[in-house]
Length: 101
Image (cartoon, rainbow, N blue to C red; front, top):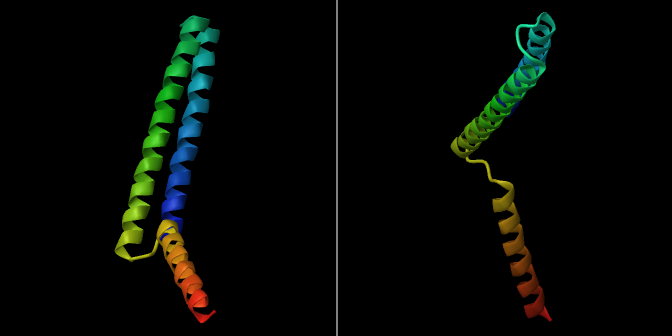
């Protein structure tokens, strides 16, 4: 299940990168044809790149949320929960060892 989420996320990130490359290519073509100035081409590429980055971050947040929800449903312990349990157990073990002395 987690692999499916990862693959979906990577696919989305790949599409965002492909979009950026395509935007830069289209921008260069428009400049080359004289339909827009170089500055307008750079501005267009930068604006669309910012939007692609924002979409990428949004996708990452959504995938993280979906993965967390899936893990919560199947009741898997998180790293933090396991670390807290380990700390608690180490404390109990130390206390037991101290009593035996």
